[in-house]
Length: 396
Ligand code: PLP
Image (cartoon, rainbow, N blue to C red; front, side, top):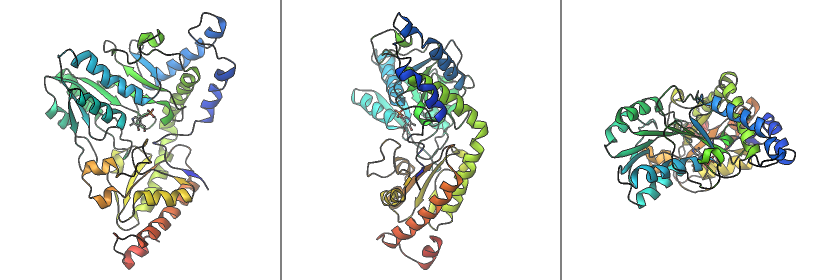
C-alpha cells in the first residue's frame, strides 16, 4: 500500500483541477499578451480564474492579487521590497519575523541582516504558539514590517494574525502573513482583519506546482522584484502561466468548499491517527489539537530518530516528514522542536504526518500499524532509549 501523509509539503493535483488546466497546454497556448486570437482566446478563462482567486481570499477588486511562481517568490518579494521602499532610504531600519517562519522568510531576513537591516525573531511558547504581545513589545518607531505566518508548516499551529494585524495598524507598521498552510484549512478573508500582504501557493491546496500569489492591499504596492513587461500591472513581469493560473483558480474554489464539506472528515482521521499513536508510551505532541490546523500532527517518539522512522515508513510505502516541508532531506533536528527548546533527544524524534481530503480511513489504519511496529523495532535497537517491559507493551 502507498500512503501519502506529507500534504504540508505538497498535495496531489485534484483531478478536477487537472481537467480545467488540460486545454491550456496544447490547444489554447497563445501568449495572453499577444495581439491575435491565439493570445486573446485564454482571456475569459484567465479572468474567471482570477475572480475565483480573489473570491478565495475575499479580496476586494480595488486590491491586487499578483500571481507569482511560488510562495518563496512572494515571500522574497515582500521582504526585499520593504528594504528597497522603506529601509534603503533611511526611513526605517527594522523588521520583525517569527523564529519559525518558512526558510523563504528566514533566509531572506538573514540576507537583509547581512546588508544592515535589524531583524527581531519572535519566539514561540511551549505550545509552539506566537503570542501577539511579543509583537507589541518589539515594535519600534523604526519598524517597517511585521511578517508572521498564519499557520505553521511543521506543527500546524495557528498564529494570532488578527491580533497581530491590529497591533501593526495601531503602530502604523505594515503586516505580511505567509498563509501557505492556512488556505483550505481555515477561512481566509483579507477583509476581516488588518493585513497588507498575504502569500499563498497553489500546490499546497491541490493545485499545480509553480504558481503562487501575493495579495496586496491598495496603496501598499511594493516595488517589483521582477522588472520587464506589463504583466500583472507591471508589478510582476513575465509571461503569464496560463494553465497554472486556471488551475489555481479551480483549486482555491474547491479548497474553500472543502472547508465545510471535507474538513470534519480530515479532522476525524487526523484524530484517529493521533489517538492511536499517543497510546504508545513516551510519545509527545506539542501544540494542542484545537490550536492547530485540522490535518497536521507533529509527534515525537522518545528514543526514535526521526530519520530512522522515515526510513521504516518509506519502506512500507508511507510518505511523512521530519523537518521543514521543503528540506526533508536535511539530517537536522526539527526547527520548531528546537525553537520550543526541546531537549536534543526529542528534537531529533519529531515526525510530521499531514493529511488531505484524499486521505482514507484504510490508509490511516495501515499507518497506525506500521508506526507501532517501527517504534517497537527502533526502540529495541536504540542506544538512548531504556527498554522496559512497559515500553515494549505499549509499542505493540
Ligand atoms: N511558506 C510555507 C509556510 C510553506 O510551508 C512553504 C512550503 O513548504 C512555502 C512557504 C514555500 O512554498 P513554495 O513551494 O510555493 O515556494
